[in-house]
Picture 1: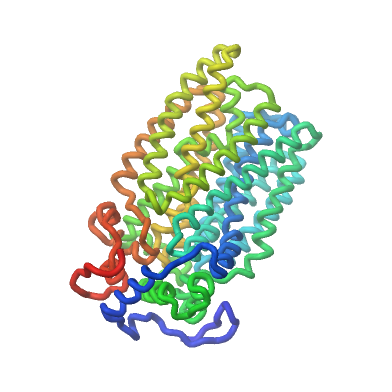
Picture 2: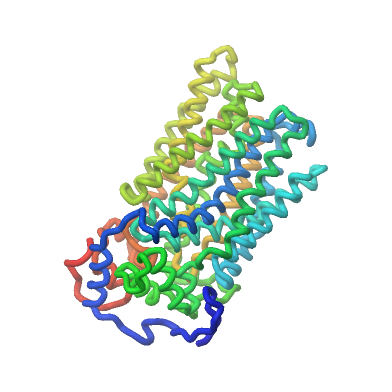
Length: 537
């Protein structure tokens, strides 16, 4: 098979699949696994510094999304915005404007997977960035309600591309030894956008038409993604899936192996990828989504992916992001200046929490962090509800108002510590190379639908039942806690390819809690052997 190498532009001959041409022995696999495990790694080598530069462009895809979350919540509290569009801060009209962004995201979902599979992860980031630039231009210059909503729709359409391509690229490029923190940092950059947006809104609060200024700032992160996307190396897993084995090895050597083409970790990853990735997979058929559910293992993956997509929006965080000023008003804070100031403080605290949490993903594991976070969220909402009621009924009770605000902030910190770094990363980990782009785009569709529902319903809910709305989140978070315990496997300590063994098991959660060993690698490359007790741990 001959095709054009995306890294060099030259025509190359490549193999369809390693296993069709070469079979490794048990001894070779154990030697590769042991060599990779015994090699000493450092976070501050030249290869790692190069890798950080690449990952930052992927991280900026999250910044784009985070900016919108804070900017819309912020300008929604600005008097100039409310007067210009004749809107209240919590109403069905506000809900529609928030939700149209998610509707645009949902409409883009069918196109995102095929673009990523056909032209690569870089192309997905580039296309998404272009749509975001166009949407920003339309929304920031809107002269009426319809034009503003049109810009929001285009923004959401583009964000779907970067929300799929960015985390997939980061997850596939991340060094396997530090995949947890490096992938977890992706969504932490959501708060970079949120912080910038919140403080730009605060600075522009008294200006006539000041609501337009924060919208102009949406050009920045998306512009950087568009400018630098094509300078990035393509994902080695995408390269292998398209038969570009030499290019994939060169990328791994440059960013994971200190330039050594025969580095133990490079050899191990290449072997695992070539046995798990086929050049004839469904990712070569843009219309074929069947592989997402055709086997029990794929259905196990899909359950985790789609439930994460919904849970990541319905745990109470989405309402907090978009309606924080309204929540503060329910707690007795009526001053525009104070609401925007508190909105600006919220994001930096959550950012610190999310970065801290990403450092624990590989140590504590995904499941313990997520479940512990949900317990904390339930406790926070249980306390916020009565405190907000007291503060609303007695505006002079500053103690109740301040305590309510403190627990709203504590909820954000608790949620951000685990869910912010885990959400996109866990979806990427639960999908194999053939289904990763389409599966992530399907997850994005479900995320958008879940987000649209909660964004649209939260406005009227806060308007009519106020603080009692928190009780809904208490019940839902309890359901999430039980669901995760029963159905979500642990993904730490394994390469992306080695997770196939987990999802193939009759009881994925139980298998995932067993320690990784040389037998794990043997199963990944389909080498039949008696159980191996020595080697990696």
